[in-house]
Image (cartoon, each protein chain N blue to C red):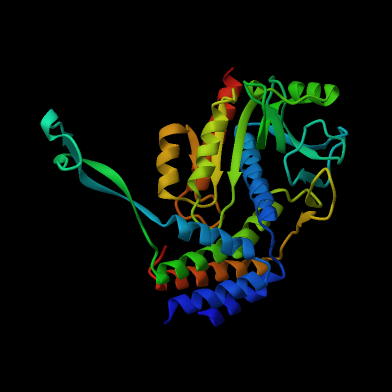
Length: 154
Length: 216
């Protein structure tokens, strides 16, 4: 599989559905890169005599105690694809399940809505879901998890 | 892979929340439900009230942080009553005043009702010393970026609130390291499909905050 090509296709599909913000968050993580700690020896610089100072006399470094350093590495194309699929899982089915749990918890409440002082244009309403829709969403989470595992996980 | 994604996600798109801000709203409501659950498990009676003081049958929350005294909309809050103790209110998205006098945004704040009422009557912001629980909620689809945790650490240095929480649906090693050194209450992977009892752990932390409030 050409992971880079698949990534681009899925990114444009998700973007076309209005989830451009999801792709942006994944790109942010890819730019950050993988950060791991690595134990390596530190360097100590030894002082030189007055006669040895200046450009022509190289610095005298000697290895010191080992310490933890943060090392950044790039995600592989396969890992980038896994990150994108994971993000899709969080943005779509996991959010639907979260909405369903909120609606179920406040079950004596008719409507839960979000609005701002300024206008109602971006008003969001949390809607109660039927059991079948929840089951289908859970299956979607499992299916996406299986794709992520197939890519070696995130 | 594309066709697999299309067949899994396609049927869900019509029922899903699309925007990033809406995702954060849902997450805040979800965390609020965990706080309410924790309060009930500690013996509280909860009810839902609108800005006008009337019992709410529908809940209207803020999508972006605003003033507790705002009359622009009839926003709702949760009233939490423990026997023989001052009543508490839980709000989504209100501004609270830090030690420096600067206003900060609390995604969720649980505070004394007397403080909340005084602020509504006088159009002032609640003092962070009267906030029992303040929660910063971060809904992210990929690894959490470090600057978000750094901002929270800066925020809590100016808050007198006893129990500030940082709660996210995701995780990141670097963020976890920073939070574990600098923040008392934080929780990751808070989603309905989490696999490691994170939700129970968070609910117990909220219960602890209420336990301490009851012991005052």
